[in-house]
Length: 264
Image 1 (spheres, helix red, strand yellow):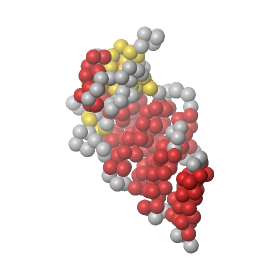
Image 2 (cartoon, helix red, strand yellow):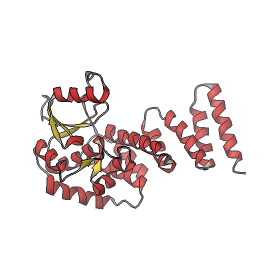
Image 3 (cartoon, one colour):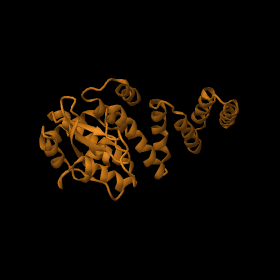
Image 4 (cartoon, one colour):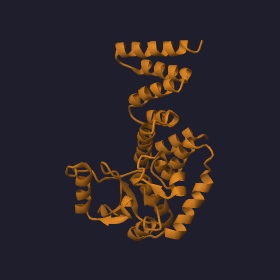
């Protein structure tokens, strides 16, 4: 099974052990086909042996302490910050990738952790086994520091300049984290003008989002700039076929024909 099919399999499956990890490995394999899933798993096993604890506070403190994994403050938008194999090798990441790393370790040692997709930042939360909800929050981008709900609210104000909206601290499953990882890569490759990176990220985003039109439109531009006219023509034809507006459909159909003519 190739990386695209593996990722789709994890995205469409119900939450279960290992889905996030396998999905992130599939994404990393898209970026670098030489990535070996088994080698990544071995590294995560070693981290669990070294830093693992069933206590979320201890796990986060050890994993993100001074000799652990650190935030990449110097180059936040480096695409490698969102690729699991690179995070493991470089020991640097962004909030989402560091949180994902912690969740992979937590699965191995039974720590009750979940991801929290707060706007503008990604956190970890200790969860109860009943319906009582979250006990504690942890910031993987700040040494695994434990945060109260009031401190989380203050962090949101500092980051975005406005109070935390209700419902912003719900825990999220592997699907949200995988799609958000792809979205982060889209931003990172775009900021660094890495067209080849965008050329593999955008189709994945288009396939896994409810409406992939915007990603496909961007993909058509990227493929054209790369001189991959046959692929660009095909994407334009798909956009024309899926477009409800006759004028827009005609424009995409014309662009598809124009690109196709370049192949002759």
